[in-house]
Length: 56
Image (cartoon, rainbow, N blue to C red; front, side, top):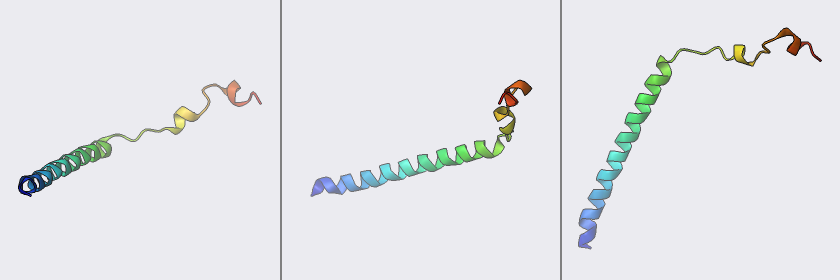
């Protein structure tokens, strides 16, 4: 029973530390996403030559 006296607070502290690290990483990832430039992906999916588009 005395082991629970320090295991429970230790688990709570480690859980709070993990949650803080997760929220910090989430905040950094979201700031990188919003700062990134939009990429025109439709240009990369179009055929590069006219013969490839009309070969059918």
